[in-house]
Length: 350
Image 1 (cartoon, rainbow, N blue to C red):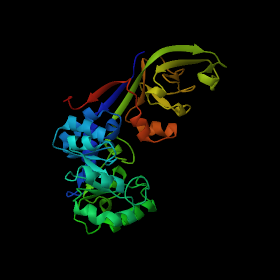
Image 2: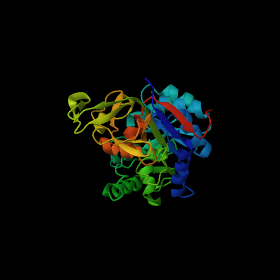
Image 3: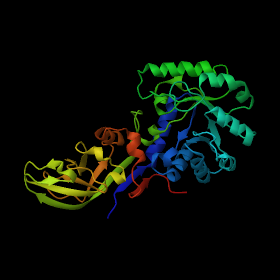
Image 4: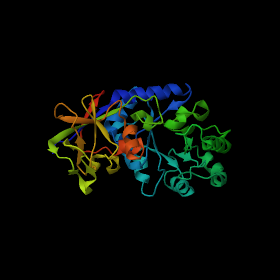
């Protein structure tokens, strides 16, 4: 079956990094989060373009991702691992020269016992209750940890995509209470926190989703486009049903296009009945359920059968599609399938 084409604009990724970098003070470093294979867009292409643009610090989720990134970027950039120093990661952390962001007392103990001379960072829990040392734990081990010279102390905002949330102020206050007076670089903000203003920036911001064109960075340049080929077009009569469960019934005689792409390709089943695609300049609505490999589109109003339809473009972003699916742009972006033919605009592969 023919595959769709996923268009990935590396120049837009670079432009978004520059724009986020401009939001922070000159003394604040702008890192880049490239976990989950560069948010699904290909770490082997995204990371080198960001490095070329000026990023010198990168964040991955796991040590395995960090090892892959080290192979891609070489020895110079600093690579932080958000999962910290998990059991079984010691040799990878050492070999790839990674900086684990320690998030528990057990991890701190493991790092000191196995890699006592290797760099590490500290994660603090300021209210998200996901990863990091809580205030009492930090008070108990701060002297020991600080004596070993962590290279970064960070926390993560839970509600940064809601600028008016009181939780942002509460976490900022907690982070300051736990770290003010320390002569160690600090980082509190990912994309959302970067947009909240300089009070949240400290020494490093670490944008992720904003690099790839997603909210909450409202001024982001769109990064991805998605075209799906039409497999077949056919006519149905009034009263005919389309798709699994006969969930859509034609009210009048209609023409339907079956399109190659479905939930196996990152287009959630929940998109129907709110997905709208483009056939050239004309909007068309999806009808019937999203299948594993196929969508069905009402093209009754078109003058001719299309050869393909567009799901993502500068006006229909991952957040637009996410809204139709009742989810968030992160999920749409990171689930875009591997069956697509990927076309990159921007840098040549290394």
